[in-house]
Each structure stands twice: as structure tokens, then as C-alpha cells.
Length: 241
Image (cartoon, rainbow, N blue to C red):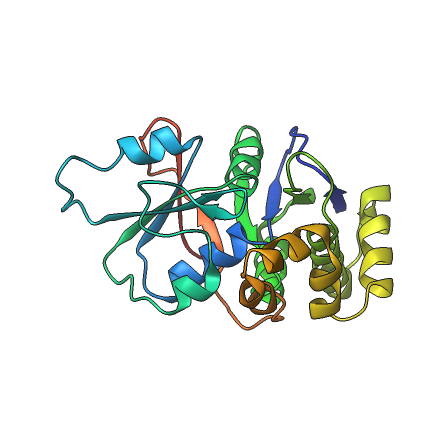
């Protein structure tokens, strides 16, 4: 079995892909499902997200997303796991579009057989699920920030890689070695996320609580999993797995 870590999304994934955007898309996605959302629709653009909601509302769809860390005009929510944790989404479908994470999911879905969303908050569960369904390779794909490598995603990939290596033997690539080194040398999760460039940016916007929330380790057993039941162009449907 191969274990691969892409420090940025590259594509060409033959098997299981774990998409990681710790600050904050995949953390928020897990939280939406924890708070009762029936499904998540990750769109290719804000325009696609806005186009899914009919005029007058009443469709059961709620929109959450950000650009530059701030809520997108016309959306119901930003991309805050703290905000999401305070809501009840029972019976709702949440449509998400973010700067980095939703795009990474679309890249993974072009070739991957099984696409899962992973964060620190569901790291144990995501690793177990990936190991259970993989037949040849598990790819840990870091979303990055504005097409640049992000410390927090690489750190989380290292956490996931540690869990996976504890479950069995893998052939690992240089990306996995980098992530494991980051995990072992960057301190505990709050130290790692707080010292990351994007973590500092979110703190400067008054969103430091989101950083602290995202640094929680394995507090959730939910793993957002891509289904093949969505026929909406430009949208990927994820449900709790």
C-alpha cells in the first residue's frame, strides 16, 4: 500500500484521497455534519453556489463560504467552525465555496475513487476510514493557501500519516516524510496552527477562536464522504460517512 502526501493539490489520484484544509473548510464541513446537516454541496465557484438557491428561498439550502477569510456577500454564513457549531442544521443542505478547500476537493474528484474530507478534528476517524477502503494508495492532499504550501495542512497530513502508519505497512513518498517531520517538530496542534501564516491572518481578522477550534484533535467521528448521487453541474455532494 502506498501513502502519498501532496503539499498542494496535483491530481492523478488512483484510489483514496483525503482532502485537508484545516483552516478552515474541512474543519467547518465536519462541524456542519455534526450539527445535523443532511449533506454538503461543495461548488466550483461562488456563482454556482448562489445559483443553486432559487429566488425567494425556501429550498432548504444554506450557503457558507469565504474569500480572504471573510464571508462572501449573499451567503448565509462564513467559513467558521465556531459559527457552525452554534447552529442547528437538521434537515438542511449546506452549500460551501471557499478560497482553497473546495477547489482541492474538485481536483481530487477528477480522478480519485473515494474522496474524504479530513481535518485535525476527525483525524482518527478519517484515517481509519481511508485504511478500510483503500486498495492501492492513500493520498493526503493539502489544500494550501492561495496556491502556496500551508504549514497547518502539512502538519495535519503528518498527524494522519502517523495514524495510518500505526495501522499497517505503507510505502511512503517524500511528501509523507516532510509531513511527518513537520508533525514531529512543530509542537502541539495549537502551537502549529497558531504559528502558521494563515492562522496569524485569521487571528488578525478576529477569528482566533476558529484557529483554536480547528486545533482540537480527534473530537469527531464523522468523515464527510463524496457520493455519486449529485447531478448538479459544478457541485460535489458529501454526506456523513
